[in-house]
Image 1 (cartoon, helix red, strand yellow):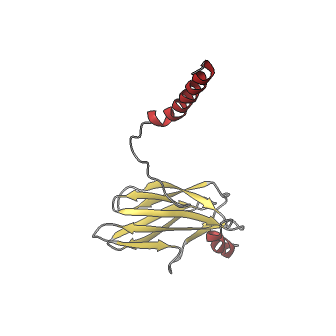
Image 2 (image 1 turned 90 degrees about the vertical axis):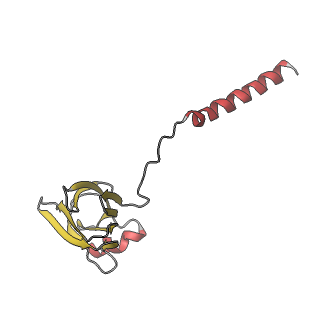
Image 3 (image 1 turned 120 degrees about the vertical axis):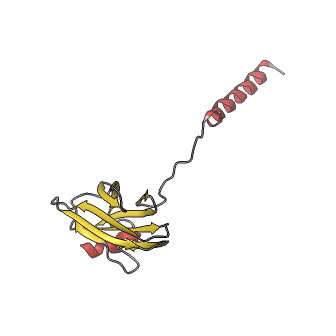
Length: 157
């Protein structure tokens, strides 16, 4: 073999090793959970908050929707607390039956509606309580740009 071929083969082998070296040295310690949706999630003992999201109309009025799953054999009284644009505290309580799900804002239930002066992409604090100290969750604000939220946004004006 001549020197050119040996050099070429060596460069190819070194390039392949360098490009694959990143994945060989990457240490995977755990899987990080994520919410495969536009909303956010939170686990508070037996209460699981799923896909909590704020949908805002052009008028600034917004609705908070999401699902709440009770994985225990006992009923849970859930409380959501937040503030509107004027700083007024809003609070809603609802029972989540044992081993069941409560949908807020769909499947026949009303959302929490209030005035909100944020723009899509911003986050809004909501506090969730299921019988202990409230936990803060930052909820994303979306508008009607996505088809699945358009009906909500248009109904708000």
